Length: 254
Image (tube, rainbow, N blue to C red; front, side):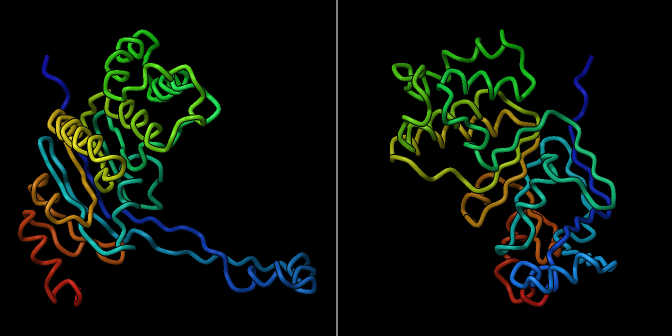
């Protein structure tokens, strides 16, 4: 039996989040305002629209780049696709095992040992203990932390923590890979090794959604570009045309 098809489908997706209004901010600095607020029946509710009416289809075997200025909505859209946020309205369907590399170090427990963190990250991903243990030799080989794997992570240097987190995050191949920027920190040797490992990780996925400001990486990894501005998709085409649009006056006018 053929494996189920992976895809992402969005229909008029909106995301609105509450923001604190002026009167509510004033409560913190004014005792009189606090008393007034306590007895007032009025309730402020101001909303900020982060994603506005987005619709698209991403079929299997797609490599999609998210393009836009800071605040355009790229990372917010990735968080929606990852399930970290839920749409306020509209329909969003994501079919397939999904992995987000928005922050590879997220979820690491400093007081736990490296080995305990490997197990914890595996369990949080829904893996069985036997499957996690099967991956441990490869994780240790890549991270080169075998000698300290039973020490608390808080005793590791920042570079050691990054190596462990990255090795764990890329040890399982998902069907849908969500990537926010490229890993470019750490020593030069690690950056070179991590690039090849991440490229292999991308090749193994059925769908890639990659948000970045690095146009060279976008052009190298993606075949399609979604250009965002103000929480909306303002252009959707092949990656070269999308990057050309982003660099043009048309983007500023959109």
